[in-house]
Image (cartoon, rainbow, N blue to C red; front, side, top):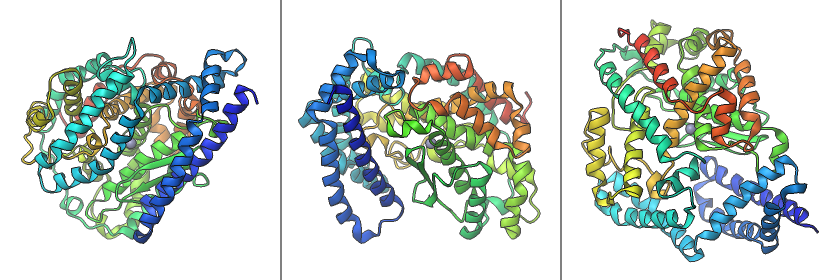
Length: 500
Ligand SMILES: [Zn+2]
């Protein structure tokens, strides 16, 4: 076999293991009975080892190294694929194997330690673990550094290739100057919300009926995906033909399931619309966390929380829960789903304040990896930044520095992509709106037209175009946070009845 044949044969095996392992993890989150947990995890251990052996096989590695330096005979797609695979491989080779294993062992208990600390409001009990995670991440930064990518940029690049501290500073400084003062002003506006919604009870069965209806409204392809329930909503996919989502129903707040379902559909429609021929390659799936989040936020906020959307679908919602919605107008409902409330918890934040929560985490991560911040000082710095950006001081660490799981898993550099995605979605909205009037299309209940635009300009490419280039290609200009600030100010000035 020549190098290419060796690579293609190993890729085929790798994808098969990946699919089996993915199915087991999907099953764990949605179906696995409690009693099977240990048995399942024993099988995962065997399969993971086999998958690792395939991936690190010396013939495969030799083939990748060869093809990366002799790309002449490769198709354009294969050139991109080999470049990506080679980048991952080089990173893996730079990390000493024993350190990598030790870190995985550390992570296997870190989640548990974090969750107990959060429950007991006990940062001190989590601190030693967090310090070890950070120490490893600092070493990782050194191992993976290149001539051009150093320090915190190394971590940022893992989640959003090409994005650096310079880019994110520009983005967050725009928010600091233009958005923070607006948020403080907006949150002083009195919002009257009906108790029937804020204190209502919404039986699960009716919610399921409405969320199922949403699947067809958004044309989420149910021949290539399913909607199930899990404690925390997520999207999980391995190929355009198998991309699944979950939601979570809360009977005291029906917004939660509706907007989780729409958000996850945004992620899933992206992956479902990648060119099907990439399913058998490493080019399938979304290209980065930020671009992925731009899609989910686009569907959730730009469509799902718009007045136009509920002009069409409010009636159906009332139909599924007539008693709960008796006497409540569509306008009152739209106000309710766009309520502005400065608060402590990121995952419960409204559209307007969401990115400010992310900004706090970004500042902290930057100081941890480029500055002199020590883990023990995190609670203090956290609270200071919340005061600065949101005008609030968390009363406990549970509602403060302990609220997110990400750092326990060593996911430093991940948070900024959440805010970046929201901002990119506004830039995409602006560009799409020049091709057709989005609100009218939503009022015509023709979301397929929007899906089609996103497929043509973004989705179909899978991982073949780097995120920064994809933004330029699809919106005709580099990332520009001004669209986001303008979008938010216009939307909330209107909804809150503020003076422009
Ligand atoms: Zn998301």
